[in-house]
Length: 141
Image 1 (cartoon, one colour):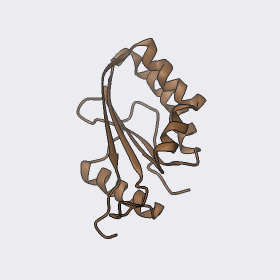
Image 2 (cartoon, helix red, strand yellow):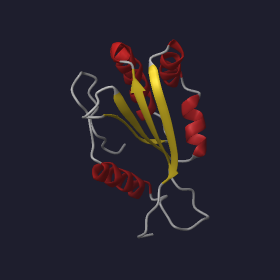
Image 3 (tube, helix red, strand yellow):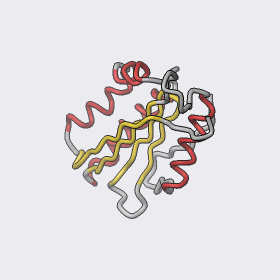
Image 4 (tube, helix red, strand yellow):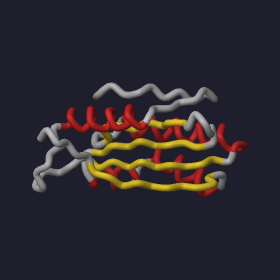
């Protein structure tokens, strides 16, 4: 397995600059060797999920995300799963997820650890959510 950024589940701020996030994406994709400009190759599927969590629900959020992150990182098709905290607004979080392909995302959503996040959402406390679905890309290929 590839090295990952460490994720602490304390009240400490966790963050990456946009440059570091881009660098992490390119490094992860380069390791998969599936990163190509050729349309016939499967590109890594990237999901960037931005959420704002109600302050009083952050301890439960961290509990659910610890379960989800740990389980996701053990999945065969998950290349990266990072949880990042906004340093200017500690109630805003980003999930940075990279999967081998669309089938790996579908598999992820069927796992018991994913249910921890889904259950947290259903219980309330997510003030806003935005999901960006992207593909990895490498100009060197």
